[in-house]
Image 1: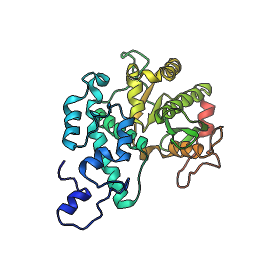
Image 2 (image 1 turned 120 degrees about the vertical axis):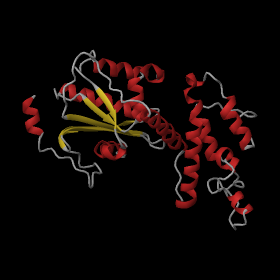
Image 3 (image 1 turned 120 degrees about the horizontal axis):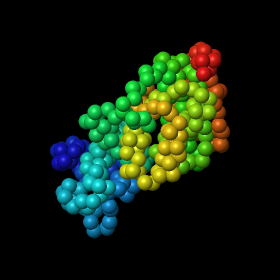
Image 4 (image 1 turned 180 degrees about the horizontal axis):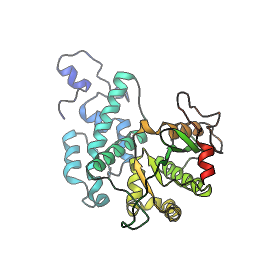
Length: 308
């Protein structure tokens, strides 16, 4: 902790530099200020599930704050799971600080927190064997599926609307059907991801497409589908998902990288920027989609529809 290259440490080592914090420009950048006292950092801690209160956390000493995080958090905090999220939050606060210092860029506190918790979940999932959800008994053999559907949501706190998108395809890039929708902003980014999954399932069922494999780059969504009882705030959406899932002989939701999800991401982001409620479902992307360099090959559409 003492080796973090904040400006006060650099000045102490004889390096000429500006003492002020580059994010808030209101105080000298000490280690404690950068991680806990800067207004930008404080907002991140306030948005997290870690209790903050005057006189208990955060304090004016990084050692007192670390003592609180390591030893004094309530033992029943979210079943004990999120008592370790502070390590990821600290790391992403520091990464955002460096991005501001070296690139002049700064993310929103909510985005920093979501990124930290998402990376935490991905790391935890990487330690486990892959889990596949299925609505059938384990004695049934799961058929090989060449048709997949990738989903994504685009949510920004400063925008009144959000975008959701999904891309149903065969092979690597043969489009069967895709959807893009702009709708009023829901409470969180995870709500947009869940809404994208539900909307994709509805369209696939209504058109009789034999797709039972879904993919998302949102680790929180995958975790929620695997352990729905741990997400009571999403009970209404999970109930709707559970009802739709009964119509799928088999169902799986897998985690993929963001780089593999560019088509659904393109549809979701471009929809959000419309700022008016629009719904689009077709075999080719809408002309307002910002899909430069992203391919939506629909050459296999007629063959697939005729086989259904």
